[in-house]
Length: 343
Image: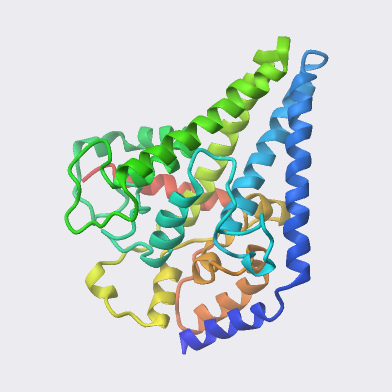
């Protein structure tokens, strides 16, 4: 019954998807471009008035957040493939972040969304760095995992970029048994270094050099904009996956699961954040992480209208609908990180 009810919600929304959604994503892309170029121009006017530089940093950070969250993440999920647009397509879109889009598609879009919170299969649970449940053996390094979390948040785009290589033990450690490579290690390294270098050259060489004597104004502005984007995306993603009530699963229990059981696991493995319209846009609508995990290929802006119906279905089945304010969910995440720092 759960499967039929959630399928019905998805089917109802799919029938509505069309010109309105295409216009929305094109409008968001236009706004993102305006924010980016406004930001880059304002950074160079900082020598006239420092507040212009501050506005430039915030505008550029907003552009990077929109690119990563509402545009890049959702386009690469295939939410807009039906438009048959050359650029707004999951196979071709490349976002403004150090992580190679193809690596993200393998590790996040397929692996994480297929095996959500199944220990040993979903490498996103704790990212191999943090112990967030008793499913993992406690180690000495877990004592300082709160500091590890802060460092990961500050360097988040690089953490995401390195995630697949770390899991494949490309540079360090012994490869896990039964792990099959989807791409060769040489290809992983090539894509990691080429995409990373492209980002570094763009933000810390080309644009600062184009500014001439304003080199340092632009360099520092780009650095802070990237930092703000990293902190924001990390915080939103942690609030959607690692709040205190989020559950984990073992592989044996998930063998041969039905579509309804898959829905059930997605529901218990994610959490929402309440907020206003602008907040939802800046999270890429990942503030509706429950709906995103249930319907990852539906245009994310539709999650708002799906949420009350999903919540009603959960209530009917006695299932917990994990939602709360930003500060409630974020406090829950921090508490979980600290709790599992200890045996």
